[in-house]
Image (tube, rainbow, N blue to C red; front, side, top):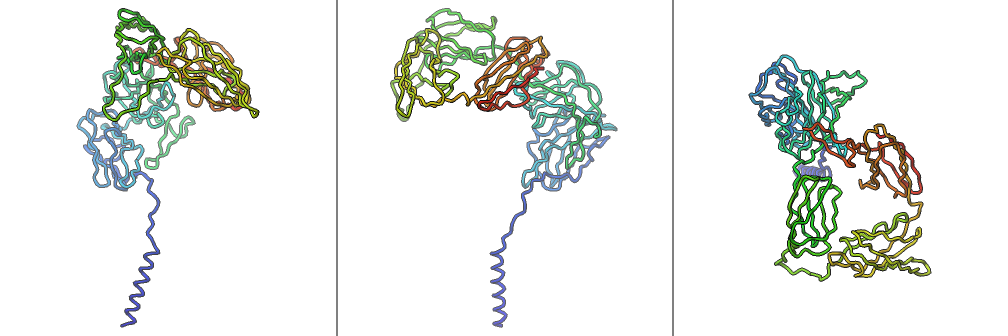
Length: 561
């Protein structure tokens, strides 16, 4: 008996020791989307007369926002209802199916597995209420007209009639959506010609009825194509693990998406959050602006129109103490009467006390500090009054500072920036000092003392670029922009004939050339208008990034076509 008890205890200790040593380890994470095991009725069924479609998967699944991710083409008056039953998705169809019609139900990441949320990217179920499945197709891509980037998740519509008012009032004959690359495909459509239209449908009613909805269109109808065969040299094969072979035509329809310019020009309430600065924002851009004094206190001001040409900035030379009535006119037709009132400071907080200072300084910043090819420039937060002041420049040397004094004259004109004409030497450390209260803004503010240190660059720190432009269409002009890697415009040129342009002394980095084909020669990019059949002006880029390196010269050829 003692032997048996001892043996039992030994076995228990051995098992306990094993339990400590061996730890269950999970397998690799599941990254596979659900797989379809069965479709009932079968996909591509004809003489379809069922009310429900049952799709069974190899695992439990969940639905992902079906109201936004399910597309039925042609569109139905009422969207189908989706529900889950075990490992199956049930699609309940409305009673409004048309006879002798091929339908496509597209589920775009609508179905995910229950455990890991892996989505089934695209699933299409086709059926026909007639005795055959339509077999024609169209495909293409939609790009943003300004950035040339992909326009994803936008509707693309087909209409079987060439009537311009259809997108404004009627649901389409067929519809689909673009994917993340801006591509779209219509499968199983009837043969024939179609009007094509793309829409960023903000209110989701399949109609272009809001002014801020972006659109794209073609001027002519497009003809549906037979589904290509894989052996065609112009085609490519796409294989979906859960659908088999899908053949897509490489000859794509290209659409440029744009937002129409708002024709309902209006002036919003003016902005006066900073003393002596008044901003007048308009709902859309304009070409010309004029102001006429009517009554009250007549103002003396500096005026700036924003780069986007949709706002006007007034910097007052003297504070507004009464009211002032002005008449504004934009583009010689839109007229507004504006009543300006004196600036009101924000109400003081009733909570904890805040530190206040009597002095509100004129902000002064310096640009081009290291650049030996561009003048050191002072930039002011408010236009400054005419006068003169001294800048003390220290050239810091090992033997001590070489001190120079530069007297600067502020002209009696609108000045918000001021270049300093001083010959800085290459690759030397400098310090620039400006005393406080020597520069005065028209708003009564003056500067704090300024001290900035920097080391100048050398000629070898810059590169040079030459582009040889050739013009294929001399009937219009081209707006050519040199952009840095942040998208900022470095230089703008207007070309109408073949020309070589040199861009000297560029900082090292990547640059791009952007071109606008200015059809109406007004010096700016113009958007399109669907009702007027106007496409947006073409924008295109040099086909590669231009890498500038120090002390390098680069020459490129660019045909503008």
